[in-house]
Image (tube, rainbow, N blue to C red):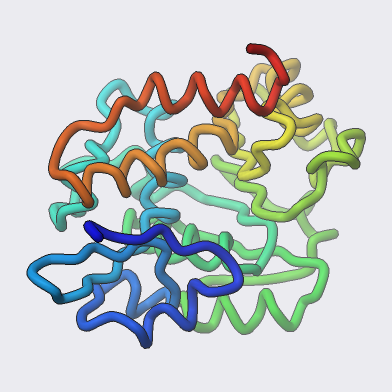
Length: 235
């Protein structure tokens, strides 16, 4: 076995099952990728990397290289997220991974969640601000990140952010990938926002996994085409 892909609910327990983990796994407390090198198991988390890369890709002409980041060269000389104000919706596992990624990139993050206690706990661990989901309209932010399940199939008519809070130039990332274009993203595009979808994260985490396992470039476009066919039912 070259490695394993780990999904919920095993991401946290898997940390105990490997020989070594990188610094991000230690911070996040969860992994989704195990690499077997000479019978030693190494744990990585490519979820944060995929989300951050998806956001950076729409913010800059030169996004972070996934393979270099996955192999340890994570500190970009210039990141478009540096100093940006980010409203992060949700406080679950995905939010946790992205929150630590945003911290690493030098963003100023505000975590909002329906259950305020969870937002507070995560914010204290990351070192950022927190509040209830209803406070979104009171904040000023450059990037809006949704990690909640609001808008996910089958409740596709729901959205975590009212359309009146969306404005031209705002960067909006929705971690939901089914449907590929959520109501949040549709309304964001209509408002002139810069958008990135959960499909980018879903494919991106698998691309980074493939390259960690094989040391070879992943067929990213083929992987994305397969995902889109399965999600849309075409082909």
